[in-house]
Image (cartoon, rainbow, N blue to C red; front, top):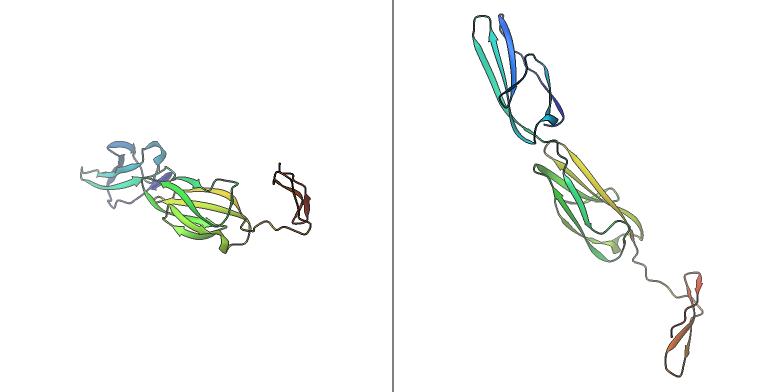
Length: 192
């Protein structure tokens, strides 16, 4: 249970006098339905009891134990970091925690690639170069959900040398790159 929960029920008695609703032994209402604010209670098990009495002094009660969970799961993406340039095979590493964790999933660009795994080996060479969003979504038993994401760029393309590469050998045998053209850009570098 989470947030506000409606407690309702009926008692059949022609001479019904009163209801009493208690949570963990403390009276919270004398009528049904009752809107229970679970935020006022700690996460964990709580006992709800409804007592009814009629005009003749007859009583009846009904008791249930419910689990309150208003805490969102904790999600952290350890690797890769946001904004990273990646290539080849990498391990996506995550930490997920919740006292009442149901499941968590790892998505790449909206497609589930792993469930309930804190490490997922991603072969980026099976994907085209470009921008990708890695997202982890965790759900707990109460339906609370937490999302975390990082954006990465896959770059498995090796730089290509164009025409016009020249090398000059000096007496001290140090090579000096005179001109290198990289993918339509002319770059001049000198190595001493």
